[in-house]
Image (cartoon, rainbow, N blue to C red; front, side, top):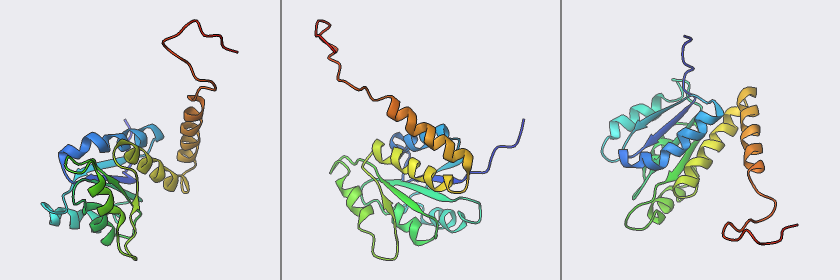
Amino acid sequence: MGKAAPPQVGIIMGSQSDWETMRHAAQVLSDLGIAFETRVVSAHRTPKRLYDYATSAKGRGLKVIIAGAGGAAHLPGMAAAMTTLPVFGVPVESKALKGMDSLLSIVQMPGGIPVGTLAIGKAGATNAALLAGAVIALMNPEVDAALEAWRARQTDSVAEAPVDPDSSDLIRP
């Protein structure tokens, strides 16, 4: 067996419960053939772990960090403050405010500390992985081809006409 490719994308999340959302990013990266790593790194409860992760990411070969967090959601911004790698923030849906608190926390970064902020939940995790794939595709023709194929499959999955599953007697052109 050959050696596994070193990770190019880091997926970090503030708690284990965030994995329900962030696993969608992992699935898309897997589909694109992009090596990644996953870690639970809380900005509030494990600040040294966050510091060590973010400051070592570039030197370890990562090209992008996807950071998911709920509630106060400081993880993406704090990671971005400690690395020049692109950081894509995924607001995780919270119980109290359905993810609006997470979204506003991530999107309101001060000028000079950019975080690409995505949609709340599964859509955001999926799109963060696709954006990470687009970044990696700039340097990797195989990933570029995989991204093109992913998009083609998405296009092909859209029907040209609506179908009413409850009525088989409709006349269709």
